[in-house]
Length: 121
Image 1 (cartoon, rainbow, N blue to C red):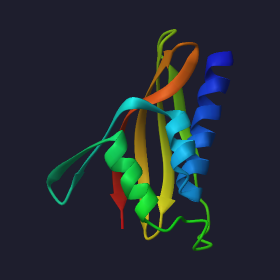
Image 2: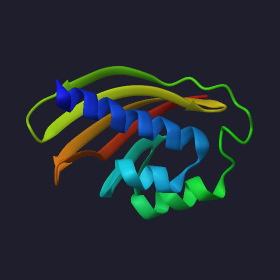
Image 3: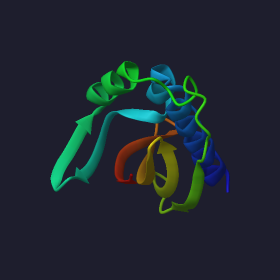
């Protein structure tokens, strides 16, 4: 049960970093070797951490625009002592996202190692 609570705390940190555009917050919850992937307009988008951090730093945050906040943990599944999966929903207006998050536990803490997303405009 502790692992699931810890994973939910990581996801809460992810939601907070997303809403605030907080690069340091993302660095706390994303593993340095994270991969972020989607198919957008039929093209594979595959980002590493530094590329994604550059995008976050360059755009206005949802908080700075006073956007409403809608984030939801749909499910969390702890598969083993070192692996887990979560499905979450969030938004960066005008887009609404569903994300598949893969997490690993390394050095005693959970981090997001992969994010695969789809957005609805």
